[in-house]
Image (cartoon, rainbow, N blue to C red; front, side):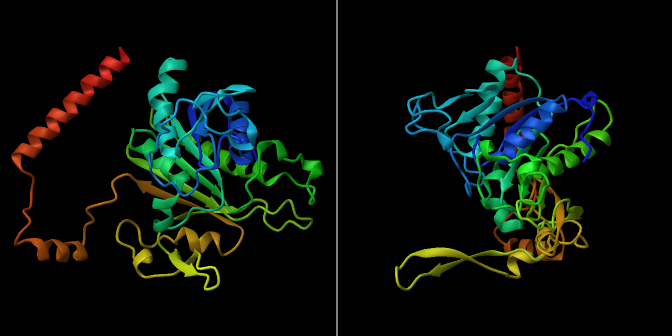
Length: 347
């Protein structure tokens, strides 16, 4: 799979929820750097799956336990650099918190407050598909936190479930099938999406419109098996709803312990906004060796249409329409305040 040319170099910030030492993110980091991009990774010190957009910062200035895979020992600073690469950082917080620590401390303090062109989250170990999973996934949380800060962002998720350290990535000759490691192929798939954005964006333009991001998933890459059947999935344009699942609580009557199960419901599969002709990402990826690319926006409230009119009509006796003048004034004042703050930080 062809990589993008170095002439299209970007300033890229990387994050994930599997941790800064995981195989998938390190392989994509390696390829992005190899393609000539300026890349900084700020990712969780330990595995932080299912944190969603929760922005949880550590209460301690030092690590209370070693980072994942014992890359950095306990007692080291809670935010710091990988021992082998100064552009790879860890932070002992959730993925969303890592995004903010990167934008508000690491980049200003150590990289001249450089402008970030794109945040890349993942690739995750395991898919993140459907509107319910969207609010649960730390991979997605890292991405839409960046979108909230005016950055284009992509959340990548692979169907391979086994969490692996980057030191276990096998060379082509070492896989059972004789093909590349799944982490390497996952990185190549990610590169193809990033490359398409670059190649179809004019110089000086944003990779994605303001407030937009992408959620990308693909089926399990099975090259570790002797007979590989899914190596290079084709991508389709999708939406969150369509074949999506939500959680149920399943109780073990012997132990009394609950675990999650899955269920299909109308509520999580009702198409409310956007292009309802698009297939759902879950039904596409789960149907074979395929990948899905869903556009999302940070503005996911206030839908339009007949159902919304019904809701508003039911509340019209007690809920006003329009916007109070004081709220308009406050909006303008708040905007000016933070614009001034941003200019002071820049200066």
